[in-house]
Image (spheres, rainbow, N blue to C red):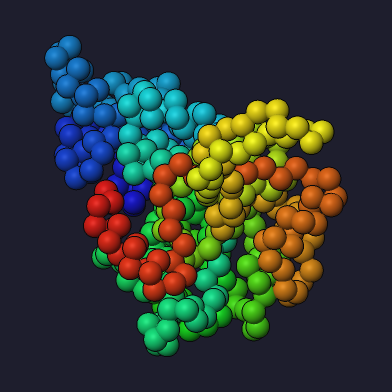
Length: 346
């Protein structure tokens, strides 16, 4: 989104604003002073109301713009505030710098949230079980519907306002770099780290030195899921977690009555009970300070880090995924995802 197309000088006429509004998708302009500091917001509705009140088309836009407009800055960038803006029906909101200038424009119809986190997508695996499909193409780029598996995850991350993304690559990594580039086409900033050798499900994170936020999302690239990243992040904050693990509920039904016993006696029994267990979903939120302590360029699986944190008395929580989740690791998983995607609203 070109910011300049949405700025109008305070001395411009209402006629000028109407012409400019006609070229935008959101029918919103931001009025700026001579130093390009934002001093008001103007919509087509504001103009209609002004004309009904008898204002001339030659009057300047500052006389009718909304001076107490809504905006986002480093202090107000919280999930709760973004939800408030969405509930108010505001579509386009400016992200202002400390000196009142627009750093970026946020289209709230295209964003679920604006989360203050970085993201790492692990895409270095060989995909051995999906051979021969992965002999000439890395597993994350295998097509699913109208785009690669991994692109669903990248697009989902971006839709939650996460712009700083790092992709860990190894096997056929150049294809992934060529496909996603630097992220400009998607309005994000994508970096890459190369694994010279397999470093496990988390080891490559130790090679990243450009995190900008205090919380980092780490996820596998070969997942197909509709996880709500905002709820995941809020859960992480509310539980004061050091690490949170997205989990998959797994139900086990015992086909017989289960006896409850003590002291050699049957005290009670339950007919064909169902027990729910939670397995690791391959998606994590982790405090940046913890990731910075990983041994540089050393192999580390997520379960290794989890065990270490448990031993240290750190807080590890789990967040159940209530939507869909498919780990595309085997041919039958890939086939299942290919069928499932036909019925998913995208």
